[in-house]
Image (cartoon, rainbow, N blue to C red):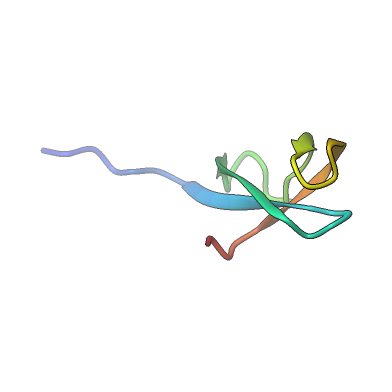
Length: 58
């Protein structure tokens, strides 16, 4: 019998400065109910910027 997948969901991260879609990651809906906000490298801005979670995956 297969196990349940669990409360994980796939989300995309977009740059807060330029709006470029850069990363795809997972998050646990139970442990982190608020949206993710991480510092990641943006290729378009060529520096580390805040990246916010979006549910729209490209």
